[in-house]
Image (cartoon, rainbow, N blue to C red; front, top):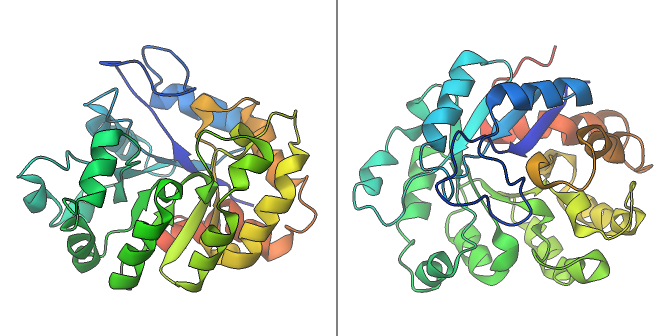
Length: 275
């Protein structure tokens, strides 16, 4: 079974310190990521450039995808406030290795811009270009629903299980009903990335399993994508893998293969060689 990580970061400098619980290291290279992936049995990964702490990370990610095309692809980003950005979105996927766009939209200025409608140009532009967009929609599920409903041909991905970012254990699932109701919209998928970080328990983080099962049941194996965000995980890379491949009795066979990589590749249009 081929395994694709739906989210990792690589960076070559830290203009500002890495956010949240990410490793406080000056750099984390493609080669370092590959070493950890190989040790964990991970075949490929989707790089999300951490633009907020390394403004050169978009170029770095594309360089990694060019050097290791069978191991990496990219969900890039650009400055939303830059007037030139409206031109950059045209032909965005023509860049080798570039699969889509991703903005976390977790900072106050970004949230303000979202709620004031200053980002309203992004969604129709991405829809027109056929560009999948990922975001931490768990922070703003109601506006996200309106975006998804207004742009049914725009493939959208909810980051990090769609859970409440700063909560742990049962509290992290506080918006679970609303999250699962979004599954009725066929253009919405969920990245099951960062799951271990929501638990105060030790591996295999059993208090998360029922909630993850509910999300899986709502979205199905074609719209539920395993991944790690490995540079902030409280466990080993291999444990991030085996939590899904060995510890979830309801995830087996073809469903498991889809969750661990096939579904993601199909959703973003990554022509990855599975056979």
